[in-house]
Length: 387
Image (tube, rainbow, N blue to C red):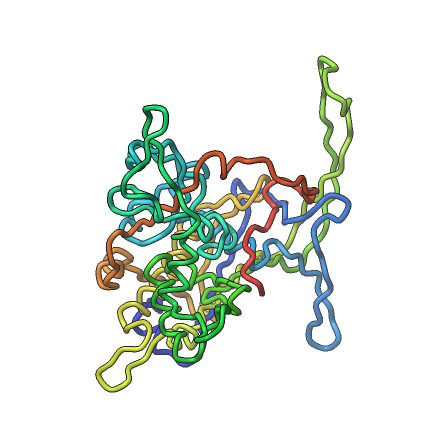
């Protein structure tokens, strides 16, 4: 019998929801490419089994990598930062730039740089905290209401006040009386949950960290993927420089693939954590209400369903399709997640999309050069919420 998971019943469960998705490579292939790095390759470890036996297990994707994949599903494409149709109306943040016209940035002139669904730190990213929210007229916070005139041209007086960070501190209510420090006393955490939910509920699903305020919210949805009975497949490749115009010449390089008897992704939804985001005190709702908490469950289930419903390319050489979905008791399951109904019931405020403005000269100014970690393409883990 096929069991159907529904958000309201999942939220009521006292135990975390555990879902197993079993994958295999597309096109009947035997091998696939796990996450790995040059000179290290992918990780295969020996896991203990019954009666002293051991089994080779390969880490295909870590929790951070899986979070990146699940967030990517929310966007129309790798280079298209619009939400997919099903998620229209869900709040998120955009970092935008462009040329101001009479102190305003028209919506059709906004150049989207990153969003809170593409940034590893989500709502806590400097791209948002240090930028200035645009009001309904497209005017950056802190701008003079009367643009100054210089040499016959309108210029805008952009002050240092009015950043999104200032707005969050105010909405969180975390400035301690008589102190310049910001830190949430116990009764202010309800404000923290409400404000994050208002601007970027996805941050509550995948976790967020504000180290400057000692605010750390762990993952509601944790996912990872392993391959069992794994073996390493060593192969090589070569780069041809037909015209001799590069300094690399014609290098031969090693590539690590893997084979396995089983590839399994594990998804865990922490229902107790979601319930802790809100409660009632008499007739007063503290933090999130029931519909808002159900939205977080629905969004988590929707992400899982979208990942498994069609073949998904986790990286170059790792194109997998889901062949079975079960609970921890090996019972086959299906997922019901009406995300549009959940968005409508969550009571989100307008505007749903918050644009954070950066002047071009600030956004693209030259910074200190830092050594970039050298890694295999598509294996960089952007998700960094502090766990």
